Structure formats: structure tokens, C-alpha cells
Length: 309
Ligand SMILES: Nc1nc2c(c(=O)[nH]1)N[C@H]1C(S)=C(S)[C@@H](COP(=O)(O)O)O[C@H]1N2
Ligand SMILES: [Mo]
Image 1 (tube, rainbow, N blue to C red):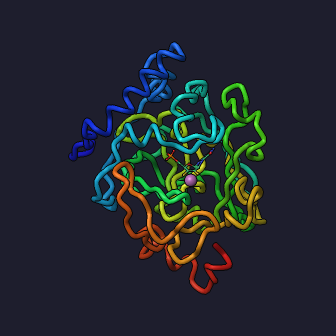
Image 2: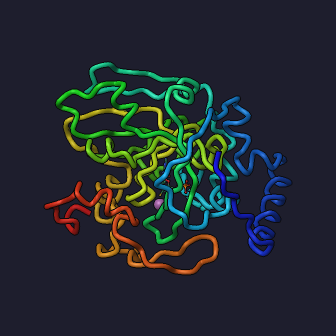
């Protein structure tokens, strides 16, 4: 387990949030566990095995866990940043299975319990940057997606990967709204999916994944805008043709397929040259590929990134 300590947020940061949580708890008649999300996988009986340290982690200060789990985008539970923490207690992370199908030699269905013991787990501290202009630094627990794809065996026609979130309005109440075309869908090119930085995460801050952060298993692609990192994945489909993500389908001018963090490509609504590192609000420069250019720039050689944004 990690040798460092998680930063304890100063009182002025935690107090308003704690007060807010207490108010929500009283209103909803729920315990704080359900609200912070630690009731999710933990209450469902999931636990993490041994977790190894990963040498590539950033040494930037971690975003306090209270902030990372109470300021989320997870539209299945509402469009407000506090909605997922307040509402995601209806998600049941176990039983849960992930299906790998399409252009594979051995279609696979893996229970989350199998996944937790089958793959070597690492703690990787990555930056996460949302296209809206905020960013965090999060210690994920997970394993390379490539390991799962290799288990299924790719056919020569496997050129793209499509991911699907669970569709179940009973567990994800905002799926009754038409804000997005459900289930949430995302896609990667096969070389992006097989890249060693591309992670399937099953936990964060040394614990099983909180519901609002995408329990029990989510994608994390650190060089792309946050929306590519699809939460609560149930299906992974290998395909020959390029999939269309939920966001791209809704607004193709704003959400490109590649969604690489790129300070030089403007977004119609949000500034991309700098970002606000949560929680203190200071703005810092956004780096090309979110600081992972050395590892991933070669994937896009010869592509016009203004056109393929
Ligand atoms: N299923 C699903 N996955 C999702 C989203 C969503 O609304 N639904 N939001 C995305 C966006 S916009 C971001 S920025 C990240 C946020 O992840 P976090 O809550 O762990 O910070 O999740 C992404 N994955
Ligand atoms: Mo986002």
C-alpha cells in the first residue's frame, strides 16, 4: 500500500461540505455512508486485493477525497456536481458483470469479484481534466485495459472499442430524462485502448470505487478529457467501424471522438488553455495531452488535431 499520506483538507474547505452533507442526510433520512459513497462497493461486499505501487504516478498534491467524491459528473444521477454523491446510493455494484464481445476470439463475461482477483492491481496517481475547465489529481486503483482485451483475444477486424454504462433507470434514476441518449457510451481507437496508461479502475484512495465515481468498474484515460472516462461499465464491444459516443451524438461540435486534452483547440463554451485545480481554485496551465505527451503523442502523428479534436 502507498507510503504517502492523503492530504487532510483544511477546515475551511471541509466545513461547508460537511454541513451540506449533514443537511442532505437529515433531509433524505440517510446515513452519511450512503452520501459519501463508501457504502457502495463496501456495503455490497466488494474489497480490494493487494495493490502494488506504480512508478509513473504524478507527485502533484492529491485532491482531497471529500472533494473528489462530492464534485462529480455522472449524469445518470443528475446534472449537478453534487447530485451523484447525493443520489448514487441506488446503484448496486454487486452482483455486476462486464461482457467483452464483438470482434474477439473468446467472448468473455467476468463477474466483478473475478475481475478483482484476476488482474494485478496497481495504484496510479493521474490527473483528470474535465472539458469544463476543472481538474483533479486522483489515486486510482486498477489494471491496464489491455489485459482484459488480451484475455478475450482481438480479431484482425478489432479497430475500435465501444464501452457501455449500465442501463437501469431503477438504479440510475436520471436515465428517465432525455439529457443524453442512454446508456452512456464511449469509444477508443484500438491503439488507445491497448496503451499501457489506459486503466480500468476498481477503486480510488485505497478503497473500492465509490458509487458516484463509477462503481464497481470504470475507464480512466488520463490524456483525454474526463468525459471519455466512462463510469460503471457493463459491456465492452470490439468493432471494425468507429463508434459514436453519447456526447458526440448530442453535440458533435463540442465533443469530438478523440477528446485529447489540447490547450490549442478551442471549445465553444470553455477555455482550454488553463484549468482550475480543485479545490483551491487557482488556475494553472493545461498541458498538451494533460502532461502525458511523451507517452502518447506518437499515437496521433500525422493527424490534424484541430480537425480530429
Ligand atoms: N456513465 C457516465 N460516465 C461518465 C460521466 C457520466 O455522466 N456518465 N461523466 C464523465 C465526465 S464529463 C467526467 S469529467 C468524469 C468525471 O469523473 P469523476 O466523477 O470521477 O471525477 O466522468 C465521466 N464519465
Ligand atoms: Mo467532464
